[in-house]
Image 1 (spheres, each protein chain N blue to C red):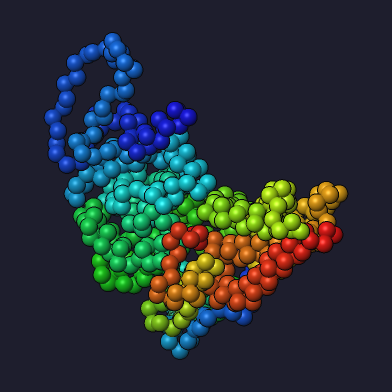
Image 2 (tube, rainbow over the protein chains, first blue to last red):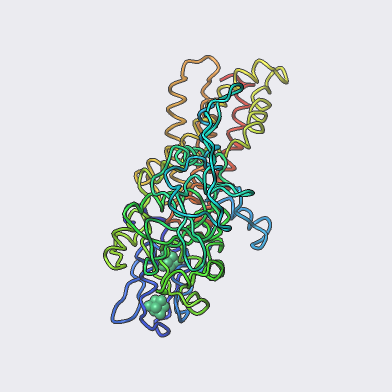
Length: 96
Length: 408
Ligand code: SF4
Ligand code: SF4
């Protein structure tokens, strides 16, 4: 998504190339083209395009990718501040 | 209105079936053919009779309007669904888009058939939100396939995957429960790419023997994906957030604010009534109306202008975008009302501030509905701008009350 960009330098995405086995699944599931293959290794090519959905990390067979996935929703985040991460819920509050 | 109710009831009890009588038996017991004496449809008294009962109906079950027959499989009868949406489906879509009945708009999870699938046909997986289900079947007019519907509690794929209900365990359980391995010979499931947030493909393979293939993001790309040998090109893998995709979210954003209506009106009336005569009901009404207009303008700016003009409103932060849109809309409102005796210079300033604070907060809330804002980013802008929004709202209230006393 080139026309819609969010904040720069905030995302928690990391990639440990030494663990990568080159299966390319992460490049397939990422909806923002954040990752690409280069010489049978995955690479982060558009870090600020990442929305921290966690699809890549969830499907990487070797846990080479880490990201703190979450719900990018203001009312959810307010709840995590008030009640803590465990009790916060999205239900009925407006996100999604 | 009666028509509409009729249509909605058909949607759940499904008396709209036709033409499938000779095709197949319904689920469960093989029932003997029914002998229908030829009686006149019109009774001698009371309202006209409804249509005759459908051969697929069974005591204790309701037949869904989107089912057009049943396909026999080694794992039992599987409902065959229509790929053409009917008026009742469209009405349902409209009402959930407007924010009504959203929390219970779902279909039963399990296996369904589209077209004339056999044991080599692809299996497509989706959520049991009826909107997702309708969207999928409407895009499969030329396709023979099995649909495996997961129980996501009536939530769409993207949100359900984020919450984990469109997840590995549910998928594995559903594959086993439906005995999918007896229905198809291959061992492949096609999942929407946006489900990858909740489903770990490798684990699915390990736990039920089916390989996960990531299909395109949009259902409209599915038939191209299927006919190209399960290859998705780059565009099919990229999420979009077009004007239409943004605008369909607007009604829900606004109807969700209903719950604050009375509290807001009460607060406005109280603050607007305060003045030199301690409290004036006349002022509460007249100045209150101005404040209500400013509130509505703030809602319009934050919930309509920002989503609609998202790529063009300056700023990366939604809070900033909202502030700008609110300032613009509030300024336009004040200019339009200029000359009204009640609208003094200071009270106009208060109204514009209120519009900006409100619009900024609502725009920030919209991040929850966008498919490109990272939670880390949202948290960052909330920490930075929520104090600003609160200060602006407080200042608006103080200036508003003060202007009633000083009269300028
Ligand atoms: S999914 Fe993991 S192992 Fe596979 S290419 Fe990506 S980083 Fe490498
Ligand atoms: S977290 Fe989501 S958006 Fe970010 S790189 Fe992974 S798949 Fe792409």
